[in-house]
Image (cartoon, rainbow, N blue to C red):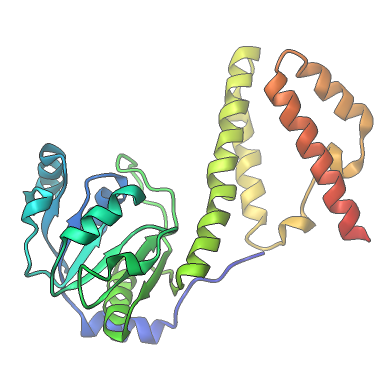
Length: 276
């Protein structure tokens, strides 16, 4: 099922014009902070400062973006937008210490916006619904889910998000948490299966890369079809002979054998129920 995340282009264009240039501070030095700093470089916005616990990492990221670096205790107060891109567990402490006049937004998918209530009168969320890595050569499309505690916060965060992404949607704490949960299934869990399979291929001397076109085709179909309509494989066909042969291959791989049996059972049960 395709999930639309785009906003009306006319509204985005207005917002981007109204807030043509913003002075931005990034708090954090990890993958999300690095990717957002790269996004900012492609716009007219000015990255004033990168603040972090590790000053060396802050200096490295700030230098690449033409900004200044600081510790968390020396965050400047003259920015329009403060983006807190840190681990969820670090958010409470930073939110309590930060007191600024600009709009403050965190990038977490599973944390309420109200954790920032002490940091500013205007606050919200700028959540990138994407798996981000600082060292990737090509930046993937990054949908942003945004929210704010009032119209000023929502407008400014929306304007920034719209200037760096073509997919922006307003999502409150509940919707964002649900999408974050769904993201764990489609990204983290599937990548775990890829890792287990890659290890199996290495041990069995077969080329894992030969599976890449299959992976890509599986995802491509989801752009135009409901996942339930394009399921394939021995489980949905009730091909017991093939299932038995696969389990024989996995006899020396108890983890994979367990996963195979579990998924086979769940697939057969899911489509049996859908037929009813």
